[in-house]
Image (cartoon, rainbow, N blue to C red):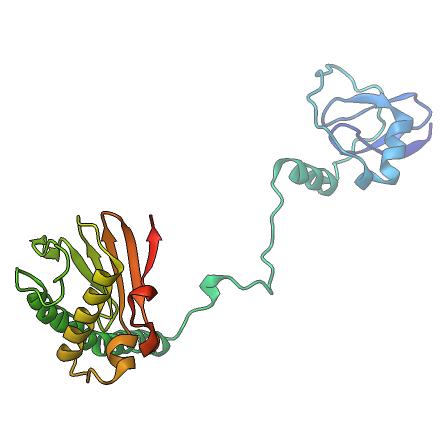
Length: 252
């Protein structure tokens, strides 16, 4: 009888077997299988997967193995760990997450201070401009309403207010240089031209602009009239444009 070393194909335990016997038996899991297979597994156990399937308990004298050996726990433990435990993903040492980047408190407060200062500067610049525009607008609106309107002399415009807004006209632009008008009357090019001139002179007076300064008095103005017979617009660039022929009807 010759002894040989083998490994159980079921649990991975080390066993000593009789290589002249066709079969061998594992003391630890009771698996009976060909001796040649046990010897072959022992040559390269890392390439083999041990299923650890429960075997039928054999009673009485062990028949096939000669010398009992304690199993080598390392291969079986490694295989079981690979099957039962999830793979642990190690953190990339070169990967930077948002939590790794934290601004110093001084830098954070500096950013907050700069942001607040920027808001204050913007408010300080634009708030006076807003109130200046609104003051001029209110002053001009007072001269445009009623029967003695200085602007709407050619056709009727509703100059009453609804929710602080005038029904028949509105202004646009930082310097109130655009006037939008709505009327139920049918209008002519000459009437639109006269309304344009009236508003330009009223605005020039409000802003202390000389009527002789054509560009400042007339060149910045744009008038749009929504009438019963269409939409009319007028804006001029030079003195020669201040004519009824320059009025454009954009909606029939």
